[in-house]
Image (cartoon, rainbow, N blue to C red; front, side, top):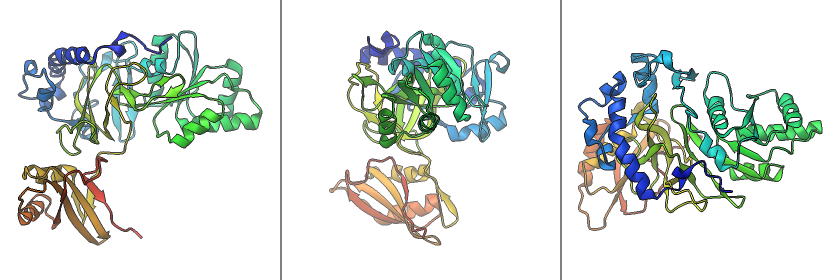
Length: 415
């Protein structure tokens, strides 16, 4: 039996794109009812936003902007389309950053990754995400309720009780961080407890190194998949499996439009190039238009072997905010992008900060075609104009800079 939640996951990709673009103007108009989005999208005619090109003209609102927006217009920056009093839950993450939860079914869209790991009605899930202030546990609760799974609300900590619950209640699956599952398995061994009912683990909130996945699979949990999400968006993408083997990449959720943009800008990059994950979410309570997650990833070409036809990303590949302090002044990715923007001959730019602390050296490495004629001295002056710092220029051949999403590389020696 396929692990699909519904037929949306196997739509023809062109049909999915048409469906999303048809819904986009209504989403933008709905968001503009909220005072925060009304300000951020001032002057935008929602009826005109019916293509990816039009969407790319709208500003990116980044997760790093939320704290200031929420201070100006508490508690949610004016970005919710549903009155606060009508929401189901209000969350607080470190920062503090506040996140809403509405009353809709599977509000965080967690059922898709749960279905992908084989969970079905009647299964039991031990939910080891935190129930304290943050939404991760409730994301899992919503997905389990939609599928029809019973939930053990275990939360985090109390490792012996976790083992006792698993041994007594025989859950089919674990949901939580991968590192905590390893701790539980080790504690079960120490206690001589049988937790072999746990054959599936859906993990997130931290990296899953291949070595840890292999360890978990070799210690009684053969099916281990990870999902990628955030407290603002919910589920963004998730791993799938075929014949028990994990498929490459992560499949995008059906209620999102994905863009990968050059860090510090809102400019989409070419398919396969690493950049910042920007999503537009069709959430009626908390619509997000070009929301910059601050995470790096890239689109993975082709369709997943599992049969899901949505776009895949390579997973979490680091942080997009590469702001670096040089000679007591901050240099931002947006400034590097501004320098490159002024010279069409520059195909790609990467600012490398080298030397030792207190003796910083800035060099802008610029990819150009071999036949390109470019005034290096003019670029040096532009670097100084934009960053207020001195920097050199090094021209390099097209395709020679790494495809890792880095716009600023800190190569200084800290020893």
